[in-house]
Length: 283
Image 1 (cartoon, rainbow, N blue to C red):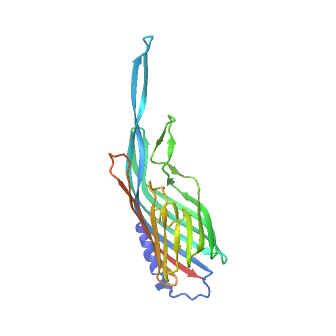
Image 2 (cartoon, helix red, strand yellow; image 1 turned 90 degrees about the vertical axis):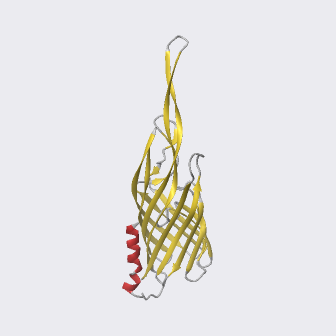
Image 3 (cartoon, rainbow, N blue to C red; image 1 turned 90 degrees about the horizontal axis):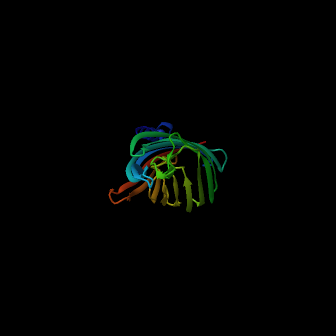
């Protein structure tokens, strides 16, 4: 978080250092984006205890066995994340870029009857490309997190029983993508996966909604933040203010949503908030 704030402060003074840039066309440029934020999500997982049993068979022999009892556990996972993105036009409608960042959260490690929690930092790299036209836009890339991304899912243990480990993280290379339909100057619909800066506080893994840049110097987007890593989906709001021809300030807000497990547990609030600064270098 501190690193992200320092980078944001450095970015804010760019217009003062460089002065007002003269340019003849908006079609050739490079965008630098820096963001930081934080929030929380709920992690539900199960531990289990083994109860041995014994008895006497019909022939008088002693038999033994046992059974597993599962116990639900819930933890509130607080996180901080930051990211930086660099994207440049290679032609009038084509862009290439890279996103880098980190997520600092807690990893739950389950061992049958008990579990431990450890703070972990996952570093992110996401090279990508896109084709952007007035009425439609599409982009894709490859996303990799060094400690994996948290995906709540069932997992088999050595006894071939399914239960939540609370720490199912994908370390595979995942796809990132977005699709936009409509002209941003009026109204458009969009869906994106693993393209937020930062990843978690920027809205989570998957977002879809509608947006507009029809209001001078203002951009607005409202939609839905899907599950993962959150246990519940939620309303998501993104906005931006153009401070100059090159500099813009943006935010993402995912309101606090309560998740409820078993009645013995108190509800856990899930949330996300981040700010971003973007600077456009014209060529």
